[in-house]
Image 1 (cartoon, rainbow, N blue to C red):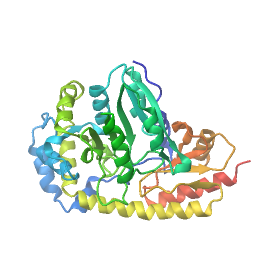
Image 2 (image 1 turned 30 degrees about the horizontal axis):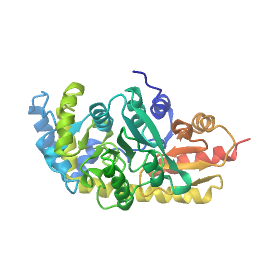
Image 3 (image 1 turned 90 degrees about the vertical axis):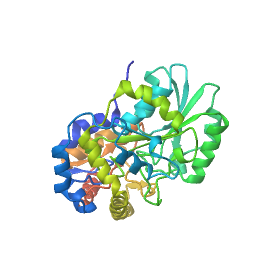
Image 4 (image 1 turned 45 degrees about the horizontal axis):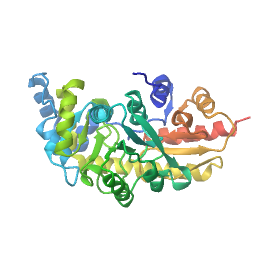
Length: 371
């Protein structure tokens, strides 16, 4: 089993700690525990007392009842028994791929998106075809192309909704058309849904729309708690039973402390979502103003999703530009070549507003000084 370099992760691992203005990340302004307690109005003394007395054993293997019930409450059709806790969304994606796919199967992968979704299957001997996003279609892939890509051995369609890096969002009518195609051919539909569109008043999940739909999510992006490494799978009982066998081989639990923090946060999911909706809308307005005033930058406006893919009108190699931007201006973005897209940069605009404004200003300075 061989894997290529994970382009985005390699870039961030090498450079994110040296940035003064980090506008590369895709989470929404990560919370401290102090901020979490302030936001939820929970008493930290009670939480820490409970933790102080709690045995640090394996805890609840699939996630505590409080956690599973809170996650189920985010969906329209899911019950606690439809939820499996994982080590982040990466753990959830890996679990589904490992359990449901094997050499000789064929999958169709939304591209570009999260690299794990196509390179892990390929490493297992699965045949992978890319369902390409289209910049001229606001970064959505063409549903007509999807139907033509299906083969007799197609086992799964894999999407990332909303999409990283572009911020494009498949609406419910679009997903219903996609699901009709999957249902006609009895194909699994895995949807990595860690990026929420705050233009919607609820999480739009394929697990709620299709019996072979598998929704992946986590605390990292939409809920601003990437440091606790908690994710989950939401799927039918039949699929969850298939995953349990393989889950026993790949993990035991996420950890007692992580489950406690996640459960506390999800108890107040509405407050976290309100906080993050405000951040997305405030910062997207800042980004929009910059795009309007910067002649060398353009984009398809993300649908209140925490990441944007910005086209730069330059001749310079995009990674060379991004390195110069970091070294000379202290500003970190993700160059588009890390998604096999030239002349673009991914901007994670949901950081602190002053960081975003300073970073965007320095991109303009760097663009102005291109020889």
